[in-house]
Image (cartoon, rainbow over all chains, first blue to last red; front, top):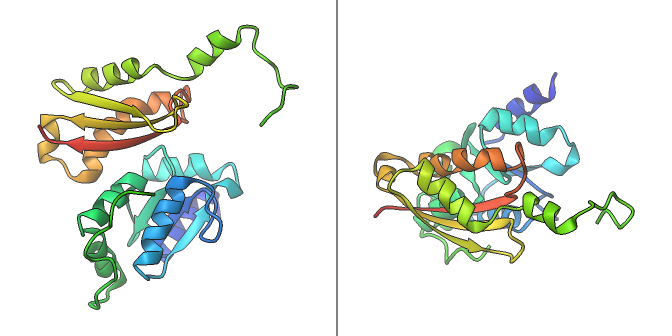
Length: 120
Length: 97
């Protein structure tokens, strides 16, 4: 399986997947840490792929998402945006419904009322 | 942190200015690319490579959030990681007039 296929498979298999610098435990970029915090605060299952693990990940990811920067967030197999888009969706209260729909849950997700600001 | 051993350019200041991009130039890229737009720019880190761009443009009206960001990002891409690398990171704030 090529790297592109591996990444595409990961995107399809993980309902919420974040491409970040560093990982959940040790984010290595403030903007990656910001989106990781949002999904942690929502208490939903999500995975991260560290683009620093392999220098080929970044260019391959860019060719998949057509988006040049990191972090990149995929929900339900679909690219929804970078860090500031996710912060904005969260602040508007639009992220939780999107995540709930993708997870197929009808239970409320924490954080649905929106973020407290953009202090990432 | 390459250390001093790495090829130090002959003219550091000249080289430095070509590695980053003056804020006025970024603003002008945006206002040229999005006719009628205005762009407020903030240096987030004081290092001239992490920018916040508050872009006000009528054309955002019919676009979703991702498309609004894309409209700005596409203009900057040649200067980002895949291109010259003069712009390392941007935060985009699309706004309607």
